[in-house]
Image (cartoon, rainbow, N blue to C red; front, side, top):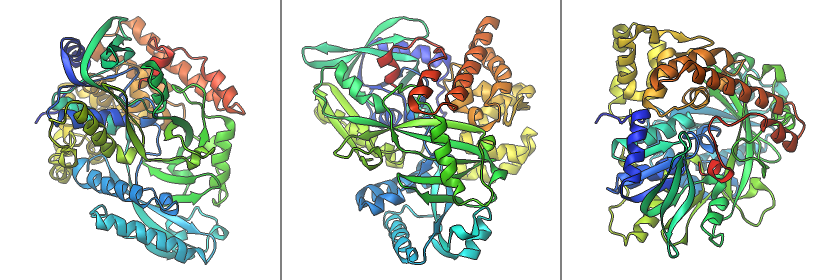
Length: 575
């Protein structure tokens, strides 16, 4: 089956389809949970539409730690079921659903006292045992105990006095935003209609029953109605705002917790394994990421701008201080290439500390015709989506099939193992270096044929992007033509990771990237200049925010950049 495009023509067709009749399900929100709901529903035979007020995955789902994991720390909280559920999903994603996107990654857990070894060892043994019991450990090595010398050979950057030994275990990682795009393209392949930059401004009602949403195309300003038998809201940290829109009594309460991550060059930390450290509030990961390391995260309450959470100087110093406590050569702010901040949608409970709130999810029917799904974690998105569509089925009198997404490979996964083995042939036929083919396979899987086809027609697209040579010019054009990227920031921050992987955060690449997009989207010279100016201003204010001492000051600075398209406060939240 050929994977569906979600480019500009398909967006127009999707809007026409959504406004032209009644859907079974309308999904509001294009993060990982909304994308998962759309795929689950359409693969059960329902007619499905999905709208997103900003870019797909523009909120929490592009700003995570980029891990697919069981959550080792939840064992200490005795939340065995949450860990077991997540390990089931880890196994499915690694081996069946998305082997091209989800990759194994090792982590070192340093021991600071000898008495910790049996305690930590028991926990990691349970972690492996739970994974094996559900098939989630297939293909992953079991944990192993290391002496201090063995640990330092794997992670020479550690101070010798920072550990007495270590335990190494395995989890997995993913490019979170690319994964969302792939789920959406898979949903579109099976018939779902998806469109970004479309804001739900209100809900349609028949008495107390929600019957759809009034939507506004933020690119044109046009308003139209989308009728649906059931609406699923997957708004994450904006869940409470949506409940207010429909006059619900607040069955779900979500608290936003900010987590920030730093990106540093790979050569700043000499190691061949990831690292996990305990902090007083959370855990700190040092995660291998191509030619970089991702270091994070924090866990603090956030009640300011949800669309653009800001990282302050205090946040950055916190992460640096904690990682430097174990590094032989400390990192400085000058070593930081990129910084990003995201918000976790935590279910509010009795605790005053966000780090102690639940990562479990819940589904509610605040009013007839509307399903809310909130909480959870990235790894268990598929279970969340299944539960939401089960609730939809109840609203449709239950006459729909059971979920099949546990055995449904995503776009690019079918035949991936064979194509991976053919890397040499693909390199010879395309004229690209084998490392480029490896890079493309891990981003597009078997959809690599589409991007290689673009390069065959236009050999100039084989060239590296100026200012960001880890990526090819073809990837920018492909993002606009196939992957629903509508603005320069969509490409530099989410379809690629240029905004956090380059020292200038994408400034040098911005004009060439905008011109490549403009060729696909029909931009005028004026439009290209506006996109570049907007992107550069956004980077400028983010950098300025990161010099501020606290959240309020950082948030105020980040409001200095305009939005590329109009967005009302609630509309920006339906994302």
